[in-house]
Length: 329
Image (cartoon, rainbow, N blue to C red):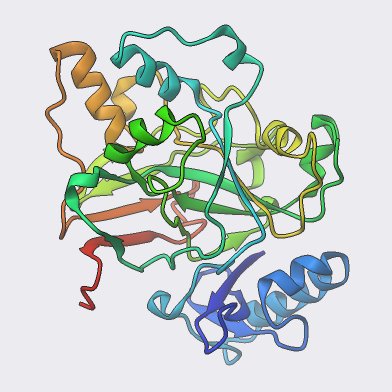
């Protein structure tokens, strides 16, 4: 099942189901007004949403043509966004570029921070930044939206709480990161709002590509139409989404609608390219002594997409342009 949210006068938008071909959307106010309401009563809402999608697939007269430009993020705002770092190749490169070793504890104890969740950018919404000098970067990730997760839920039970999956562009302002981390209090200004894919999908949409709470498909990224990379989400992954959920719930319950992110997808095979510009710069620093690739500039276009073995765009495509704050274009 694929769900989306149409923009409306409400900050939470209007929930709709999406046809199998991604061409049409059907509003479902009789089931739930928005995705958060559906997540709050998932056991009752899920079968009704699936029935609505079946009707949409069977009757070509139902619904309306889907225009991705009219979509909000599938979850326009959430109660929490916990972002992990499941792909340790990315962490190793970060530390190696500055001459530091990765602590052995990182192999068993996931990195995680609490990111901005009061609003998620729509899949075609511009990335608005105050200054290019802040080091604007994309980070392509997979994320799980959960139902209520009790405090202390172990890894072997945590995966059962995954209700939906989304793609995330976890925008980072790299030039602001060192000073913030140096304070010892974590990210704030260096981690603005993230964008979500057009569709939130139930794990069964992935078929055999969803195994052990890991997506086994490539994460494709582009910059100004040129390939950045297609690292495989099922390769070089240290922690499953179930492990990250359990980590987040160790000392607190997670409310329905919490988003748990995988961190930047990263493979050791450099022929697979990258899912963020920082990784290119780290490799250049290691090999050449200094980075050469610039971070994002105003006017740059980024795209993120996952296609399955049949070539179908599973989540739809994130397509964003970098713009200065206040530019209404």
